[in-house]
Amino acid sequence: MNTTHSTPSPLANKPGRGVLRLVSTKDLNREDWLDVRKRGIGSSDSSAAIGLNPYKSQLELWLEKTNRDQGLAKPNQDDDSTPVFWGVVLEPVVASQYHRRTGNKVRKVNAVLQHPEIPWMLANIDREVVGSAEVQILECKTAGINGARLWRDGVPKYVEVQVMHQLAVTGKQAADVAVLLGGQQLEVYRIERDEVLIQHLIELERQFWHYVETDTPPPADGSESADMALRLLYPEDTGVVIDLSQDQSLNETYTELKQVRQSLSDLNTRESVLKQRLQESMGAASKAVFADGSITWKKAKDGTAVDMEALFKAHPDLKTQYQISKPGSRRFLVN
Image (tube, helix red, strand yellow):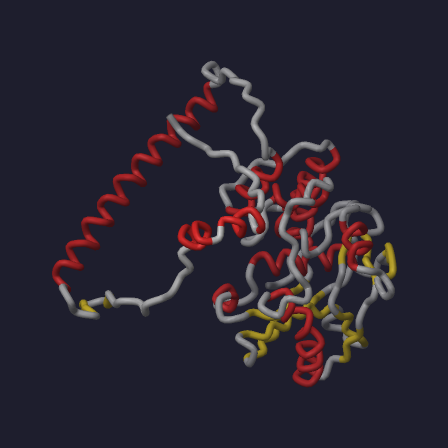
C-alpha cells in the first residue's frame, strides 16, 4: 500500500512525535495486562472495533471493554492445539528469520504504548526495527492451513488495520508484516503510513469507544461472535411481553426475517431434491465425475458408543454420582 499525503487532523499522531509508554509489560502478568488493555483500543482490537475482524464482532469487543466478558471463552495460552499457542511460540522464530532475510535488526518493546493526544488509542508492537530509515515496526504473524487462505492476496484487511493503528499510535512511517504460512513459507509485506486511512480509522474507532464510554451496546453484525455476545449479554428472559407493532422499522425487519427464512426453507428443499437425484443416479458407486467437478458418497468407518441408558439402568447410582447441571439457553422462535 502506498503512502497517501494529506493535511493531517490535529488528532493524528504525526511522524516524529513522541509516543507514550503507558505501562511496562516486562514483569506484568497476563491478568494485569488484560486490565490495561481495557483502558482503550489496542492494535489487536482495532479491526474488531471498526467491524472488519473475521473472528470477533464489535459487540464481543464491547463486552470485553465494559467488563462483561466473564462468560466468554478465553484462549488457553498453554493449549498447543490452538493458533494462539503457536503464534506465541513461533513469534521469535519469525522475527529471527525476518532479520536473516532482510538484515534489519529488531528488538522487543516491553510496553503498552499510548497515543500522545488520544488516550484511548493503545498499541503493543511485536518488534521495533532498529537503525532503518525505511521501516520501524515489525509485526509477526503465523497462519496455519486454514488461516493461510486469508493471505492469498497479500495482507488481510484486518491485519492492515492493526498495523495502521500501530503507525498511528507510534507516529512511525512504515511497518513490515512477516507471516509464516503453513509452518514453512515466510512472506514479508511492507505497509506504509497512510494519513487519510489513519484519520478514517481514528474516527471509526472513536465511534466504537463512544459505545464503551456511554455503556451502549453496538449493533450486532450477524456473525457467530455477535450471536454469542447477545446470548451472554441477555442470558435470561423476564416473561415481559413488549408491543412493537407500531415500530415501522422493526416490523419491516420482522417481515424480512420471515421472508428470508421461507427462502432458506425453499432452498433447503431444492438442495435435498438435487442431492437425492444424484444419489439415485450413483446407486452403490463411491464417486461420480462431472464436466466441472465430482462428488463422493462413501460409508464412514463403523464406530463405537456407550449405551448410556443401559449403563444407568444397570448402575442407577452412577447417574446421581456423575450428574451435572446444564444451564438452559434462550430459544428464538418466529411465529
